Image (tube, rainbow, N blue to C red; front, side):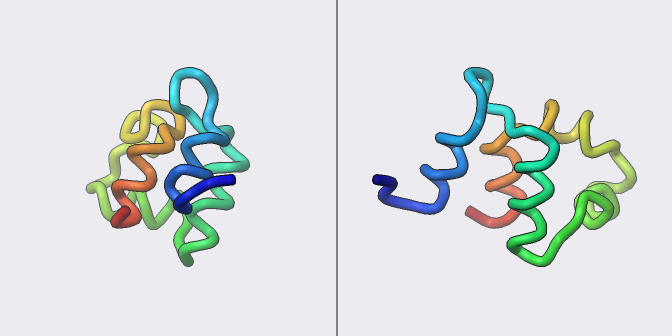
Length: 65
């Protein structure tokens, strides 16, 4: 059905491109990361501020996709 992992993640996002908290946590965990890792890597910015409520494209970009 999907041609790439990225496409499957984006498909699971809502109309604004945002994942649920649980889906975002699963995405990070599947790559060995947590929200704490994300915040530490971004100089203490809150995850919600950084990702505009768990934006799928922003998370994928941070993961290197």
